Image (cartoon, rainbow, N blue to C red; front, side, top):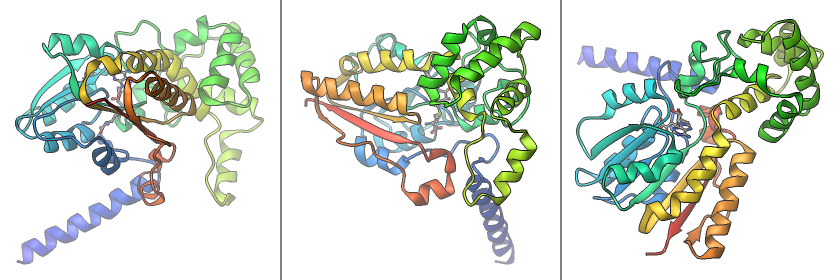
Length: 334
Ligand SMILES: C[S@@+](CC[C@H](N)C(=O)[O-])C[C@H]1O[C@@H](n2cnc3c(N)ncnc32)[C@H](O)[C@@H]1O
């Protein structure tokens, strides 16, 4: 009894520490908190024996939840363009329950994946776009402005160009357009101009160099911004957040992949099949909305979500990273 009480106290303490970490927008190292998990299940309604393609496997939290619903007669196909994280997740969730297979591939290739599995379609397509906490927290990937490292940003190491490469090859106009269209950066033109000026002197290869450049454009230093944060009632977005987001989206051709997935999805779903997509950025959400609206008008989809489903305040408090999440879904004719 005594031992059990002690164990519970320990768990309670570590649970509190986990909640504190998550409220700061951070995650327990090496893990990822699934976004809108309940809503995804109640909307897409996975049934025993169904085939689910999780296009963005990540840590596998959504996939495990799907797996429990489809049971041992179901089939779970997990895709991820990040081979390193895919291998870890496969080791963790690969055994037991539904029959599972894993593919190190871009979800734009979903039709090829189904063909390779000798399937004529699936019942559910799910995608939780963007990057995982493990990728953001890994300084070697250079995805986040939070810690210094090489400006790589590739989710798939097979991609040819890193963020640092694109900061050399993209024109000022291309940089400015990306910053505006992919992250609504208000200082897009000046940041692009400064990048082009800076690269004539020295290549921008490190996270810290790009962060400093953005601070300079905005007339602040990291210290003055941090000081302002302490007195602000609500924390504000880091000045470099939009720049990093836009560059990452270009490096990984995230909009191109999403466009392709949306284009082929109706033909990859069986009768009565459902698709659900969680996006984190207005450009992505617009693409999803337009594709579902068009699919509905053309008769490909029988039903689509009327509005985007957003996380409740309670979920945002415990997992601030999900604050910009928008979930949309569509259903094919039965
Ligand atoms: C937000 S995380 C998904 C988290 C996951 N739902 C979970 O519960 O752990 C996004 C994942 O999708 C992957 N990803 C992003 N774009 C992709 C694409 N076009 N094709 C395949 N995987 C992609 C990323 O590498 C990352 O692991």
